[in-house]
Length: 512
Image 1 (cartoon, rainbow, N blue to C red):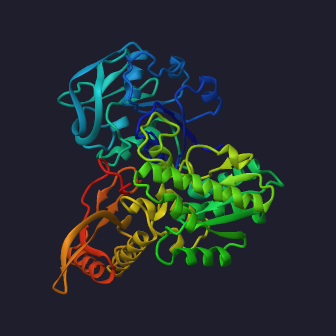
Image 2 (cartoon, helix red, strand yellow; image 1 turned 90 degrees about the vertical axis):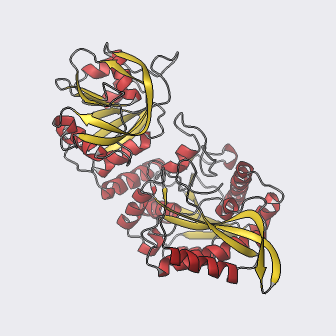
Image 3 (cartoon, one colour; image 1 turned 90 degrees about the horizontal axis):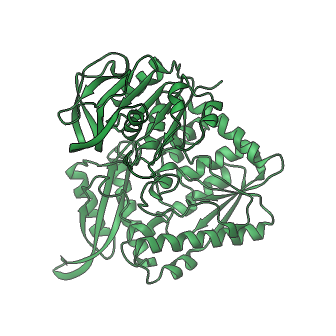
């Protein structure tokens, strides 16, 4: 039986990162709601249970609670942040408001460098995010870590294998955080690490077959990006010719991309491929629209209408598939208590008006790097697997203000130059995402002794491993200079270039 770690989600912004770190250790994990009945948890026979962080205080009215019998079930438990405080409260300890809140990197002193904290530095930089903290441990627990302001930064009951930390080991900002998770998995849960991306692929293909059945048909919303391409491969391996891919050309793709997508999916995959040219419709509906969320909703609505039209023309299709991945879900506030950062046209449940039986989203729990690894496992070409991430709304959210064909062309040409120069510099596999933005700002310039008043182009380049957090890429000045010179010289109506040096958070990777 496959090893399983279950993560109870209390609405923390890093919950899915916990699952990701566990999977990096080759142990399969799933995120489930905090209020999942204990009987259902035990029926899954997990090797361990992790309690996530969350936005609530354990003392709030209606704050999430779990059945305390979980701690007596003989299953190792790791409580993180809210999960630690909840454990303390339910088992007789005390939780109080901290005298000084801790947010960001904090030095944690490890009082015991064995067991859970084995291999970690005696003084380790860890990521804290809390106002409340454990002030007294329950009976049977001992303190194994502390900070200047948090006397119980970690506690443990070795006999019952209940481990708790106030800091977040799942984020990359925590030094040796992965070591702590590995210790929990391999020292307390007795995992061996038998899960691989090949195993995930086999499971996903089997689940698709079970969902669709022996005769069901699937209509895939194919954008041509990495995510939907991997979904296409998965579904094709599961049901073969019963898959139909519909590619909506909304006129907001990158330079040459529309023709490339058509070529790849006409020659690489022996599936039914339909190209729907809907550029005029999208530009007409976006005319005069400047608010980012309204743009996204219009594009999402138009996608639905185009797919509805194509589905009607195709005749009865049973299932609708799309390449939703977890960052789409979390930013849309779906499935957790997380705030809505921005809407994604492919998130939010199956539109009833499409008339499909069920939604197929096999990548919904994966991050971008995991999707790429899955693509390679499935045998997709590396040039397709490692393509730059591209948002569903396309260039519409890289144009600040009203979207027009002329503005789209400015972004398309400037973006092509940026991507070409990044590749020429050999940095295309080192910078995780890079693109240009038409800021909407016009400024005075001089060209050929004449005054100009044209647009400012922003360069955005980031490094990240999960797309939930990101740092701006330190590109060589000479490279930035070449890109700037080429854009101003080669792209009509571009007169100034700036470089975005903002991290995520506080900014998002895209500008809208």
